[in-house]
Length: 250
Length: 268
Ligand SMILES: Nc1ncnc2c1ncn2[C@@H]1O[C@H](COP(=O)(O)OP(=O)(O)OP(=O)(O)O)[C@@H](O)[C@H]1O
Ligand SMILES: [Mg+2]
Image (cartoon, rainbow over all chains, first blue to last red; front, side, top):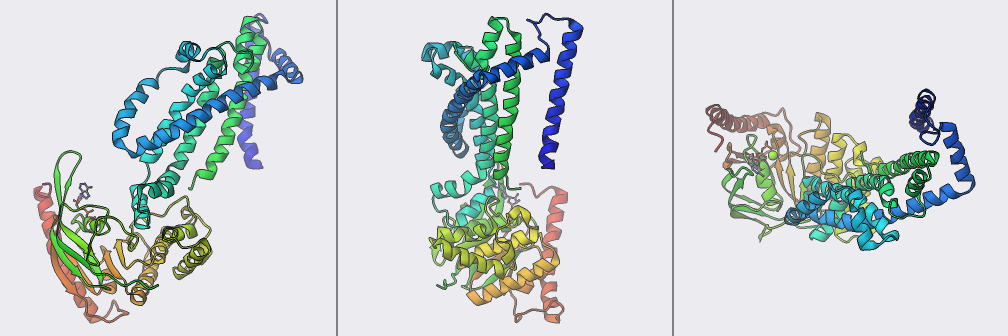
């Protein structure tokens, strides 16, 4: 109990510090409320959005999109990473392709996503997919290649006669902590990409809340969207860290 | 149930490594050795002379560049659960509990779960770790880890056990305890053992035959029977004589190694 309190306290202090700095900027700059509303106004909008249930709708939509994209990414990226980690010949072919695509921001995919998938759900999921795919591939490859060779030998001499058994009983479990780290990082990058994804003709979602707030000059809504993304990001990461602990052996 | 001990034959075994920089490193000169079923052979020699290389070929991890090795008359081409191996750095599976580590090979042998857990527990008790069955390897000391590794290899009841400096990193007391355990298993279950060690004393204490290798590239310098009855006593005069004999051989090789190194001849 004290442990979790000790871990959450810094976040609460950071939050209070940010709100304080925000209030001071508002007071000293005298910014117009449409440009930078005071924290209290943003809090009021936040409460209103909660009371009307609208905020939960946005959160649900965004989370659903990230979850869908992340699941698809995992289903493709884990096997790909496993193959790349095991076969250096396959890695030599696949790695340059991946390295060429990796620096391209999910934002850059927006036009093609619209052309290919239209303005429905699939285009948005595709953009988040781009953001979630690479961390999983790279961490899976690192995990497989990082397996201690002596564990592979131990597996072989303890009766893992064929490649498939060795893979299932030794390589996969040994690489698992890295793969889960990939899942964690990738959910984070996917979550950060909802803004990009929901720039594309969205009707709801936290990214939509922000984009829409900008259009109707409601910067309080923009700020609520940003704060919620930040807080939920931390919460999701915490969940992953707990999962990760189950996979760490040390 | 009891497996028959196997002979090991090594015929003109050679090993040349190609390094990533394109150089060739000769690790083994042609080595020939016949090990009878149930023998306990200790392999000693200067560091880098090719002891691990030889053991890794025998265990089926490396393919020699010349000659061949046979176990029970069959050429060794790949690792085999009947040829156990104990590694210097334990090689326990960190994601498995201690008992699951010990039961790992038993599962591969197709033994039912209840049976293999029971057998694994018995072997854990043999090495004095009965109470640690549910721990993870990371919760154990180095000596305890090596005891788990021993239990793991004993549990699969291999007819040959290869051991590469298994007790090298252990404290004197744990080492003594495990030496006793190993001798008991060897005598009771008639296994063929090839044991690499840096300790001449350990070699004489355990083995019925000591093979001294030359400095790299290794070949066999002497092949010495140890005609002492078990349990052996370090302080006995005969024990001391063997010690002197082996040390004299090793000193010759050490002198060569240092001589080479100071002249830079060792890098070929
Ligand atoms: N994969 C490899 N590639 C290149 N050279 C190697 C390789 N493995 C071993 N060698 C070289 O072969 C020689 C013998 O190595 P080996 O590990 O068998 O020695 P060792 O007798 O076990 O030494 P130690 O007592 O220090 O463990 C060394 O010079 C080593 O550098
Ligand atoms: Mg060695």
